[in-house]
Length: 144
Image 1 (cartoon, rainbow, N blue to C red):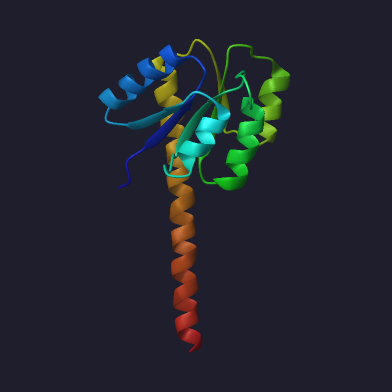
Image 2: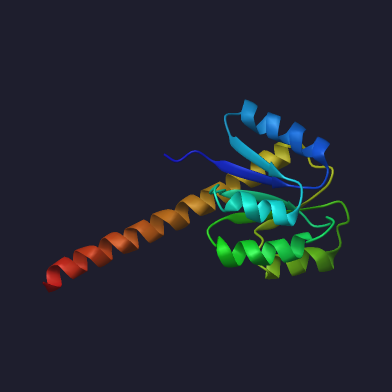
């Protein structure tokens, strides 16, 4: 079974390093990025299953980053992090494809719970794609 891979995106470096260490202690691979642009660079070479994405960041904000991620990496699940929770932000993020959102400060229990939920969804999606491809190749074999 594939091991969960997480990307944490936030401009608060202390939050990133602490959370990354806690995930790694649990045996979960984690990478970090301090901006939306950095996150997109990391994703070019790192297949993150779950992305925790801060909304308020300098430069490219979380909503713009979310749009790029869902367009370029549709199987990755995004969970919005916000210290400024408003229903408008949450609804907009969900409309853009985020799985859910968490309000800062976030406990490790909440991080882990959302990560497991998102990873389960990614795993099921990948299994469906694999099954569909297998069925398609089996069907093509019968046509010959």
